[in-house]
Length: 171
Image 1 (tube, rainbow, N blue to C red):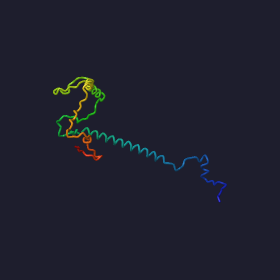
Image 2 (tube, rainbow, N blue to C red; image 1 turned 90 degrees about the vertical axis):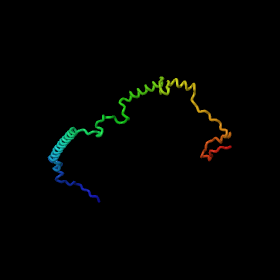
Image 3 (cartoon, rainbow, N blue to C red; image 1 turned 135 degrees about the vertical axis):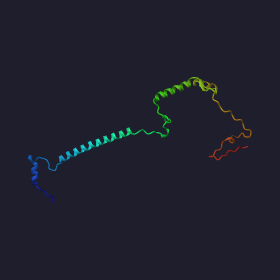
Image 4 (spheres, rainbow, N blue to C red; image 1 turned 180 degrees about the horizontal axis):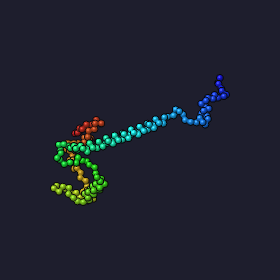
């Protein structure tokens, strides 16, 4: 039941567009003069906006220059400016760490006073290591044996809450 047409239906528009003399423009194109007018008004608006912004900028600069600088701390007008509390940025950190390491190396490799009034001095670290090896580290004296404690080792064990033992001495 399909309809099949052998001959196409030709219209006047088809003939007009098919011929070379019919090749032209559509009459429904965009209005070029209206687009040009819009571009002109847009340019004028941008120029006026830029001029207004420039004037406003000049006004603000003039107001800032005319205004007297307010005192940062009105009650401390006569005092000189002080630096805020530290910490401050290091101007040349590489130099400061180099000087710090030189001071530390000098302290570790030379003799010097720690407290002259108390008679405390520091010695080079290599000599301190040798003295430590010769004398040994200080240790606590051994506690005197308690006469009341028995020979039982469990009597000297500390309390352990996980095992249920308490700190009792057996006699």
